[in-house]
Every structure is written in C-alpha cells, then in structure tokens.
Image (cartoon, rainbow, N blue to C red; front, side, top):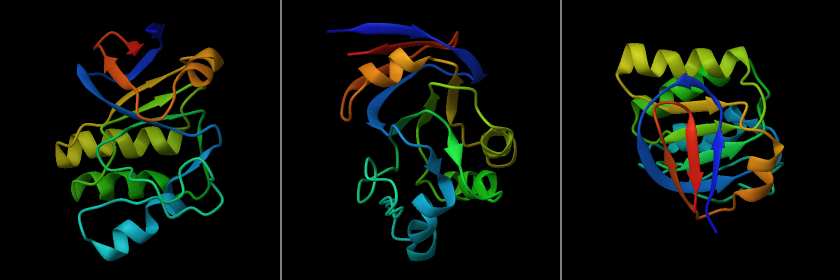
Length: 147
C-alpha cells in the first residue's frame, strides 16, 4: 500500500531512500556520539533510551520522527555527521522541527554542501503509517510518498 503526505519544506530536494522510524524524540547527541568518536564510516545509533533506533544504522537513511530532543549540541552534531558522510539522507518530522535541528541542517547545507532534505509538519498519521525499511520518495514541494 502506498500513501502520500504533504509537509512544510525546511530544506527541499528530490530523492528516494529507505526509512528508519522512531516514535520517540530523537536525541541527536546520544544517537550519533559513538559514531563521531569511532570514525569508522558507520553511524549505529548509540542512544540506549531510544528502543526504536538503538543499534540500527542511521547513515544514509531517511529518519522519520516526531521531533528532536536533548542537548543544544544537536545542530552541531548533525553538521558534523553530514560532513563525515554518515549523516541521514533526509529527516521527516511529523511535528514542527525545533530551531536547533533546523540550524544544524541548514549549516550542513551552507558550510559543507551536504544537504539533509528536511520536511516537517507531516502529521501523526504519517508517523503511524511509515515503518522501517520502506521506500520513501520526497519531492521538492514537500510531498512524501511511502511505499
């Protein structure tokens, strides 16, 4: 079954990829801390408090989430993992994006020319529908198709 959702474009782009889903807030620092220190080309989620993502590969995935939580370093961490080539391909928020995540995503694009396509306000139905490993297609206008 395929479903289409429409959100607000934070940083646009046209791409396809594989979903990884959390129904909890994403603590960016806790999730990427081990990946940043090991520098081995992978980004296995190290946040033991996030049972949806813990132990799963985050690099190159489309992260589907309600919102980010945690430290004020979140934006800097996103910028760092993108620069290392282990950042997410896209971030799809069911709720409003927070200013720290937005800042990090924009800095990735401006300072490092590493775009993390980002859409927010996709709604609770989006997060209820999408599952790990599904194919997601994102359009520049904020249209997200999950199949």
